[in-house]
Image (cartoon, rainbow, N blue to C red; front, side):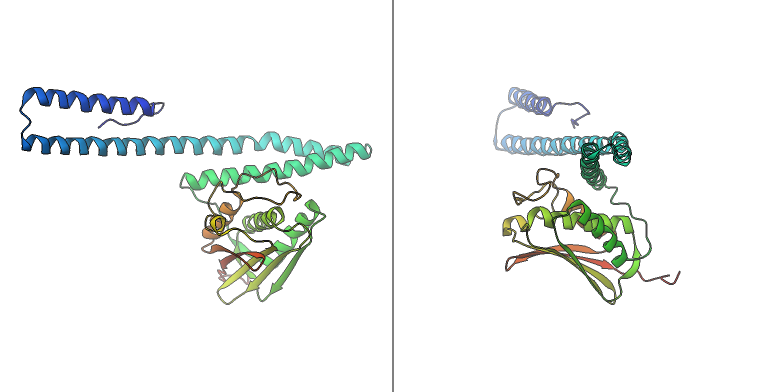
Length: 293
């Protein structure tokens, strides 16, 4: 069977199969009479060729997808170093106290660098999942209420005009990958800011249950049912509020990464949108072993 190779043109592949089919059929017609048995054989031959074409195209597409995901992963990884240099330089400029204009410009660079770093992190995570590597997590004893309070403080600094409320109920301790779950919360809150009603608060509810901790992030505004069905699919974006901060950025990967982080912790993520409100719910198994240490 012909196989698609690296750099092989799919059109060339199809042309070779067409030439193979035509050559075999012509020789067949020259060698024998087309009786009923011969026609059945020709049908089976055409079916075999069609199946070979389908398998080759699938193989070729898989190779292309893998190459693309490798490129995206390398791009996201390699861009971190120059971005880090930009952020370090901007932080240095901000600390110089060289005047209001310089400080303001440095602050803009720091905020923009933070947004770009979040995009690159999502891009690298997306590439890992598509390559079958999954999301890396490193579990340690932690209290989600403290982790999320710290993350919300940083988000309030990045979005000073938005109100974000944290409500905690029950025991929220467990074994978690703290930075990953902070990334999960950051993506959910950023999504709520971007797509929710601008003057309405974002509500974060953390509830400790017997076996799980449940996180709910809600905002005013609804999502169309057709979008909600594919809300966790990668590279999907909905219509953002026009005056929401940073609506021109994003790759449509934030909620996909949320789902993958939840799955890596053995949990799940879901969304509902009704009665003027959209709520994202994440369930995280507690993993209570060795919490005393």
